[in-house]
Image (cartoon, rainbow, N blue to C red):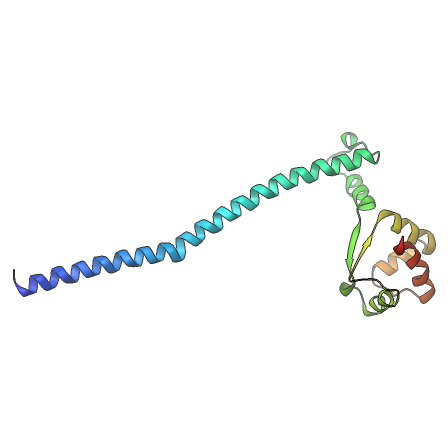
Length: 156
């Protein structure tokens, strides 16, 4: 065999090895992470499906326990949503409130998160009235007397 033929065979062999190496590297750097991400996504989707059905069952039980007849409510009716909103606690981050409200909550010793229950909403509405409570919820700062009367509702 001539030197030229040996050189061509060696070059072709090295090119094939380089191509195989590139394919293997591409598989491990590109394809394997994509497949791993897809598997994690499928797993997360399945967990979400399971959790969603658990949440729906728990919500139905809570509504039944509180006297709501879920079977008679129409799908898409706002009454279920309104009912859930009435009984579900609301968690408010103090940092998301206007500075005036943050300083009032700091003065009265509240932490970073405040949990508002249905009972607290009723108490606040009783003390301030629905219209004023709506103003405070939308960002208006309560006066000191309003804040001190609301603290009793929030501390319960």
